[in-house]
Amino acid sequence: MEPLLIEGTAKTPTVKFDAKEGVVEIKGRSIPENSIEFYKPLVEWLEKYGESPLALTQVNVQLEYFNTSSSKCILDVFKKLEMIHKGPNEVIINWHYEEDDEDMLEAGEDYESIIRVPFKMIEIVD
Image (cartoon, rainbow, N blue to C red; front, side, top):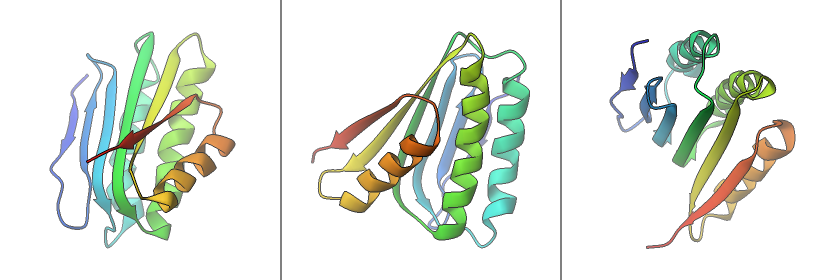
């Protein structure tokens, strides 16, 4: 399966989904003009990956900021990961947040309360 690589911009995060490594990464800012359009290929890729995932899928999320429409799309991505996790496969979501960014920590905790996938809160210390 081909990796999904999207170069980040001022409005969209860098995306690196690699089926061979079992690594899913989203980093940067997420304020695209059309969130649904931006996140659609990510959700579709995870659907396909979910047909034969690795035993362990590591998810690294390191967002500086995301808008409300992105938050719904990020939830859709996590729901696909939850489906993968329901099988015999393990999924771990590493939620990275800046040291003083209470909002981003809370956002991670909110997702963790909705999705039945283990989250690791990782503080980024400068």
